[in-house]
Length: 395
Image (cartoon, rainbow, N blue to C red):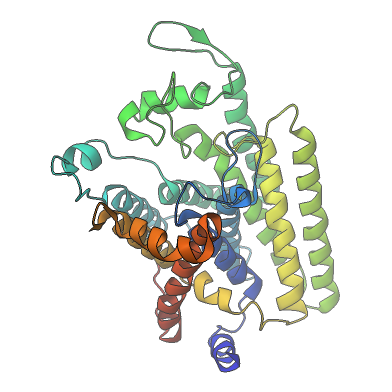
């Protein structure tokens, strides 16, 4: 194991902030872990999303990844204060991310149903939005904002991206098919963002198709603009690093700024909860503050531990995930779908593995978690082979 850790650290490019790669690795590893339980009927509460209002550790994972996207946009330019013009390179990356999301949306076939129609179920009813699609849209929007705006302008844009969608949900009226008018509703299936999703995307092209009165998508159109504020907070954290000297005193000062800023956002977001409910699907302003607060605190802690104190060995394996995050997400997505596509007797390969191997050994909840951990361990072996061969899948 010691030699394995040495190999990982030796291949880390010089001049790179290890804390950012570790944070990305933590986000994508956690995302894969919570998305692949042995059974969705047996999931420990911290590894499940909040049912509606409120938050769990799982609800922080996607915002954490978007926060790192913003950080990476800034750090990729080094300490230069200039940012590249938005051109084909940025649009190509966004389009490829969006296309990969659509690929995962159609990558499924029900081999257990002789009457199953892939064209009708997956192609005609394709889900337009999703995790990768949201990352793509947030990324390209933030590319333009970072290019065009000063630091003070980015602060204003961050506030507006979070606040304007929320104000629209509170004050814009909308109607159902029967002509009944609603305003300011924040219920599952009844909020302005849900109405907008079913109008723009179509009721058959969203995740919650059976929601009443309005089918909607948790990665919907309006809330994607709110999600851009999370990415912009990552940008602002990166800009703080750019303005920091390379001496140890300046680095410690930055660490304290990140830590205090993260704690402040977390506390303010939590205090706002009675007035502005913390809600991931709505990507409410309080949700932005709470999740950005947690993300910044994690960044501060990792920066102090691995970039200032250089205590790197224990966390080094996360680098294997962090440098190939999209490859890991796609691998996990494809494998997860294959496990529920392939039939074994009267169930699927995933069902058979869980009920005959993991559940008898570890119990229902423990077996479901062990299944997810086993998947992550298997994916790690693949990612390690890519890492040691310096194969970095960039979109």
